[in-house]
Length: 65
Image (cartoon, rainbow, N blue to C red; front, side, top):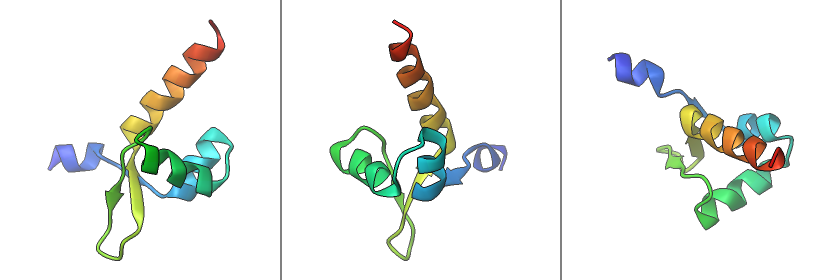
């Protein structure tokens, strides 16, 4: 059960707010494999928060190089 608590899922809008991009950009990233997504029963995309943070860290690192 602890694993489920650690695996917080984010909506495309939440991810977009983190990266300061449009939610459609986040969907595009999912389509090209930059960020993996999970589909809900209703067909909506959800993103793992830990993967989002890892991508944010790698993008931030790349800017400082």
